[in-house]
Length: 190
Image (cartoon, rainbow, N blue to C red; front, side, top):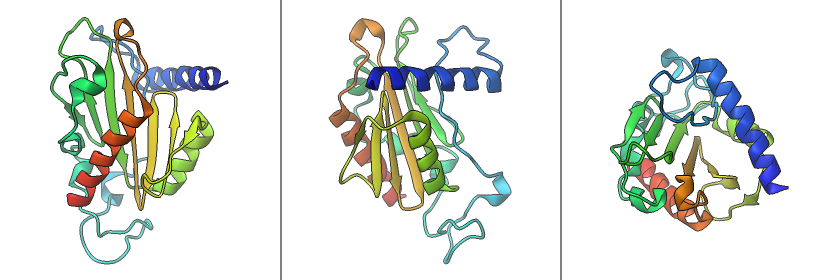
Protein backbone atom coordinates (compact mmCIF):
# COMPACT_ATOMS: atom_id res chain seq x y z
CA UNK A 1 0.00 0.00 0.00
CA UNK A 2 2.81 2.42 0.89
CA UNK A 3 4.52 1.99 -2.49
CA UNK A 4 1.28 2.28 -4.47
CA UNK A 5 0.22 5.50 -2.72
CA UNK A 6 3.70 6.97 -3.05
CA UNK A 7 3.94 6.13 -6.74
CA UNK A 8 0.47 7.55 -7.45
CA UNK A 9 1.32 10.79 -5.66
CA UNK A 10 4.71 10.97 -7.38
CA UNK A 11 3.10 10.56 -10.79
CA UNK A 12 0.46 13.19 -10.03
CA UNK A 13 3.07 15.67 -8.83
CA UNK A 14 5.23 14.96 -11.86
CA UNK A 15 2.33 15.61 -14.21
CA UNK A 16 1.44 18.84 -12.41
CA UNK A 17 5.05 20.03 -12.47
CA UNK A 18 5.42 19.21 -16.17
CA UNK A 19 2.17 20.96 -17.04
CA UNK A 20 2.98 24.01 -14.94
CA UNK A 21 6.56 24.37 -16.12
CA UNK A 22 6.24 23.18 -19.70
CA UNK A 23 8.95 20.54 -19.27
CA UNK A 24 12.69 20.80 -18.84
CA UNK A 25 14.65 21.96 -21.90
CA UNK A 26 18.14 21.28 -20.57
CA UNK A 27 17.86 17.49 -20.74
CA UNK A 28 18.15 17.05 -16.97
CA UNK A 29 16.07 14.47 -15.16
CA UNK A 30 12.43 15.41 -14.74
CA UNK A 31 12.23 15.61 -10.96
CA UNK A 32 8.82 15.67 -9.31
CA UNK A 33 8.06 18.81 -7.38
CA UNK A 34 5.48 19.49 -4.73
CA UNK A 35 3.17 22.46 -5.05
CA UNK A 36 2.90 24.79 -2.07
CA UNK A 37 0.68 27.86 -2.05
CA UNK A 38 2.92 30.91 -1.96
CA UNK A 39 1.61 34.47 -1.55
CA UNK A 40 2.73 37.23 -3.93
CA UNK A 41 5.72 39.23 -2.68
CA UNK A 42 3.48 41.98 -1.34
CA UNK A 43 1.80 39.47 1.00
CA UNK A 44 4.99 37.95 2.39
CA UNK A 45 5.61 38.60 6.05
CA UNK A 46 8.49 40.64 7.37
CA UNK A 47 10.39 40.77 10.61
CA UNK A 48 8.43 42.91 13.08
CA UNK A 49 6.17 42.57 16.08
CA UNK A 50 2.63 41.19 15.99
CA UNK A 51 0.67 39.22 13.45
CA UNK A 52 0.51 39.96 9.74
CA UNK A 53 -2.76 40.46 7.91
CA UNK A 54 -2.43 36.97 6.43
CA UNK A 55 -2.46 35.37 9.89
CA UNK A 56 1.25 34.55 9.87
CA UNK A 57 3.30 35.59 12.86
CA UNK A 58 5.83 38.24 11.89
CA UNK A 59 8.40 37.35 14.54
CA UNK A 60 10.33 34.93 12.30
CA UNK A 61 13.09 36.43 10.13
CA UNK A 62 12.10 35.08 6.75
CA UNK A 63 15.27 35.79 4.77
CA UNK A 64 15.31 32.05 4.08
CA UNK A 65 12.27 32.52 1.82
CA UNK A 66 14.54 34.20 -0.74
CA UNK A 67 17.27 31.57 -0.39
CA UNK A 68 16.55 28.33 1.48
CA UNK A 69 20.04 26.91 0.82
CA UNK A 70 21.69 28.30 3.98
CA UNK A 71 19.20 26.19 5.95
CA UNK A 72 21.15 23.12 4.78
CA UNK A 73 24.30 24.31 6.61
CA UNK A 74 25.58 21.58 8.90
CA UNK A 75 24.02 18.71 6.90
CA UNK A 76 26.20 16.12 5.19
CA UNK A 77 24.58 16.40 1.76
CA UNK A 78 26.84 13.73 0.25
CA UNK A 79 25.73 11.25 2.90
CA UNK A 80 22.05 11.94 2.15
CA UNK A 81 22.55 11.63 -1.61
CA UNK A 82 24.88 8.66 -1.24
CA UNK A 83 27.46 10.33 -3.50
CA UNK A 84 29.37 13.63 -3.75
CA UNK A 85 26.99 16.57 -3.83
CA UNK A 86 27.08 19.49 -6.23
CA UNK A 87 26.54 23.08 -5.17
CA UNK A 88 23.12 23.94 -3.73
CA UNK A 89 20.94 25.98 -6.10
CA UNK A 90 18.37 28.41 -4.71
CA UNK A 91 15.09 29.34 -6.34
CA UNK A 92 12.84 31.39 -4.08
CA UNK A 93 11.67 29.08 -1.26
CA UNK A 94 13.37 26.03 -2.76
CA UNK A 95 16.90 24.74 -2.46
CA UNK A 96 17.91 21.93 -4.78
CA UNK A 97 21.09 19.89 -4.57
CA UNK A 98 22.07 17.59 -7.37
CA UNK A 99 24.99 15.17 -7.24
CA UNK A 100 28.36 16.37 -8.52
CA UNK A 101 28.23 13.77 -11.31
CA UNK A 102 26.18 14.93 -14.29
CA UNK A 103 25.38 11.27 -14.98
CA UNK A 104 23.58 10.80 -11.67
CA UNK A 105 19.82 11.15 -11.42
CA UNK A 106 19.83 11.81 -7.68
CA UNK A 107 18.18 14.90 -6.23
CA UNK A 108 17.72 16.59 -2.87
CA UNK A 109 15.12 19.31 -2.51
CA UNK A 110 14.21 21.48 0.47
CA UNK A 111 11.12 23.71 0.39
CA UNK A 112 10.21 26.17 3.14
CA UNK A 113 7.02 28.25 3.22
CA UNK A 114 5.23 30.40 5.78
CA UNK A 115 2.02 31.31 3.99
CA UNK A 116 -0.90 29.25 5.27
CA UNK A 117 1.55 26.68 6.61
CA UNK A 118 -1.01 24.63 8.56
CA UNK A 119 -3.43 24.51 5.63
CA UNK A 120 -0.64 23.52 3.23
CA UNK A 121 0.54 20.84 5.66
CA UNK A 122 -2.93 19.29 5.71
CA UNK A 123 -3.15 19.54 1.92
CA UNK A 124 0.13 17.66 1.58
CA UNK A 125 -1.15 14.97 3.96
CA UNK A 126 -4.29 14.56 1.87
CA UNK A 127 -2.39 14.58 -1.43
CA UNK A 128 0.51 12.29 -0.57
CA UNK A 129 -0.90 10.19 2.23
CA UNK A 130 0.94 9.39 5.43
CA UNK A 131 3.34 6.48 5.58
CA UNK A 132 4.41 7.24 9.15
CA UNK A 133 3.78 10.02 11.65
CA UNK A 134 6.89 11.48 13.30
CA UNK A 135 6.88 12.43 16.97
CA UNK A 136 9.14 15.14 18.39
CA UNK A 137 9.87 16.97 15.14
CA UNK A 138 8.16 20.35 14.96
CA UNK A 139 4.48 20.54 15.85
CA UNK A 140 3.57 17.74 13.43
CA UNK A 141 5.49 15.71 10.89
CA UNK A 142 5.06 12.76 8.57
CA UNK A 143 6.89 10.69 5.98
CA UNK A 144 5.40 9.93 2.60
CA UNK A 145 7.69 8.04 0.24
CA UNK A 146 10.91 10.05 -0.19
CA UNK A 147 9.38 13.12 1.50
CA UNK A 148 9.46 14.38 5.06
CA UNK A 149 6.91 17.13 5.78
CA UNK A 150 7.13 19.19 8.99
CA UNK A 151 4.85 21.87 10.39
CA UNK A 152 6.73 23.95 12.94
CA UNK A 153 4.74 26.94 14.16
CA UNK A 154 4.06 29.07 11.09
CA UNK A 155 6.60 27.25 8.93
CA UNK A 156 6.01 24.34 6.59
CA UNK A 157 9.25 22.64 5.60
CA UNK A 158 9.69 19.54 3.55
CA UNK A 159 12.61 17.65 2.19
CA UNK A 160 12.76 15.13 -0.58
CA UNK A 161 15.79 12.96 -1.25
CA UNK A 162 15.99 10.62 -4.21
CA UNK A 163 19.21 8.75 -4.78
CA UNK A 164 20.45 7.55 -8.12
CA UNK A 165 18.99 4.09 -8.78
CA UNK A 166 22.49 2.59 -8.97
CA UNK A 167 22.89 3.48 -5.27
CA UNK A 168 19.51 2.25 -4.11
CA UNK A 169 16.95 5.03 -4.01
CA UNK A 170 15.82 4.65 -0.41
CA UNK A 171 17.05 7.07 2.23
CA UNK A 172 16.58 6.04 5.84
CA UNK A 173 13.76 7.94 7.57
CA UNK A 174 16.05 8.63 10.54
CA UNK A 175 18.56 10.34 8.22
CA UNK A 176 15.83 12.61 6.81
CA UNK A 177 14.65 13.40 10.33
CA UNK A 178 18.19 14.28 11.46
CA UNK A 179 18.63 16.56 8.45
CA UNK A 180 15.28 18.24 9.12
CA UNK A 181 16.24 18.78 12.77
CA UNK A 182 19.23 20.77 11.50
CA UNK A 183 17.02 22.72 9.06
CA UNK A 184 14.60 23.65 11.86
CA UNK A 185 17.49 24.73 14.09
CA UNK A 186 18.83 26.91 11.26
CA UNK A 187 15.38 28.47 10.78
CA UNK A 188 15.17 29.24 14.51
CA UNK A 189 18.64 30.80 14.40
CA UNK A 190 17.86 32.97 11.36
